[in-house]
Length: 214
Image (cartoon, rainbow, N blue to C red; front, top):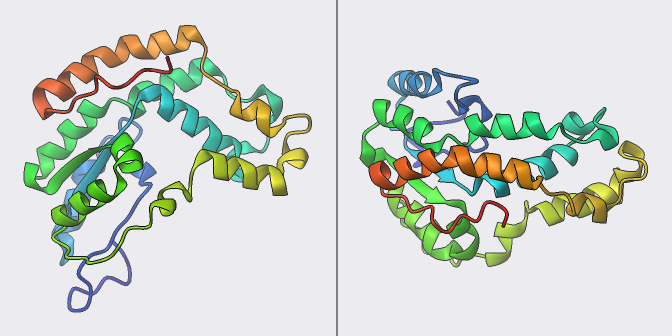
């Protein structure tokens, strides 16, 4: 819980990039979040964002490679694609994650969004989030803010300050050219089919626009 939260002053507190909520690495995350809510003065709401698994893999790769905490020691070996693809099976098991949160929170307190909508329909999606959080904000959204944490920006900044020292011989162009192999994209596509079907049938989430890196 946010240590500075005060229900007499604050209307909302937000938390993002909650890696501790990943299942199955942290199997009881949804239950623990619910238990924490019981101890707080706030009503928790969950905003869950889903993304094309191959696009997520690429983003994860860029994020790890440009993070000194993660990247040191990887050198030009980069990632073992078998491990990366295997890890995605748990991270991108979206329907399993949603099942867990729906077990502890009412459907009205869970909003599931497509990452692509945040990027390409930013204002409408952000207004949808405000409605979900019952916030009345009369502001003009700055479209350029959505790209402040983009892979392109992270990589450019990384190579400007650290790149040649951390990865001798690795250029920005080489990093941006990285893609999952055809075999691993097919592997991801295969195991994602069942999850996509459940997302559509159970949660009315259309994933037909996912291209899996094609």
